[in-house]
Length: 231
Image 1 (spheres, rainbow, N blue to C red):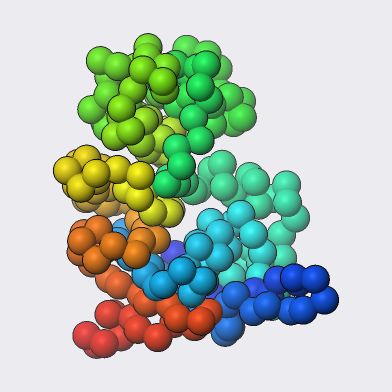
Image 2: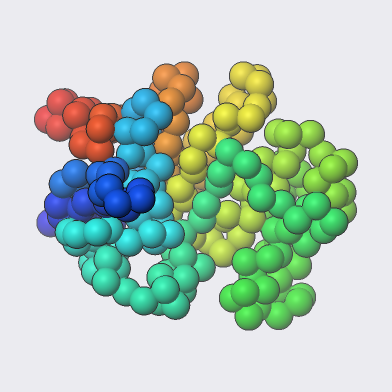
C-alpha cells in the first residue's frame, strides 16, 4: 500500500503564555491520502488552525513526527520548510492578504516571483490561474475594485498558480455571504475533481458538507473522524 500523502505521529503543540504552558494539540495521529477532500472542524480554541499551520509547514510541532510525501518535515529548517510551501502547498485564508496597490494579475504572480520564474511564463501561468477561477475579465483590477468574492477568487488563483499538490483553506468563506460562499466552494470542488488534495478548516456545517471526510477536534484532540467511523 502506498504511503499516505500526510501522516502525523503523536503530534503535540504547546505554547508558552507568560510562565504557563498551554497545550494546543495533544497527540494527533492522522493520515491523509492523495486527492482527499477533508474538513477539519471544532469550536474556537479546539486546535484546528494550529493543526493546519503544522500540516501546511507554517509551524513545527513541539513533539511528534510529521511526514509529507514520505519526507519527515517536522525537523526541517525554516528555509527548507519555505521551499516545501512554495513547491507543494497552496494557502487560502479568511482574510485575503492581497497587495492593495497591485492588480489581480500581479497578486497572483507573486509566488512565481519568489520561485524565480521568468516574466513571460509567470504572466501566462497567472492568467491561466485567474481563468480557472472565472476572473479573467477582472485581472487588471486592484483589490479595492473587486467584491469580497472576487478577492477570494484572486487569493485562490494565487494559491494554485504554482500547481501545488495540496491546498489548505482556513475559513475561506468566513467573510462572505452564503451565495458567494457557495460559489467559492464550487471552485474548491472543481480543484478537488482535478486531483488536488483539499484540507479545509471551518466551523460551518454547510461548508463542511462539500468535503468527503470530516475530522472534529476538541481541546486539541481528534474526537471524530468520519473515515474511521465508516470503516
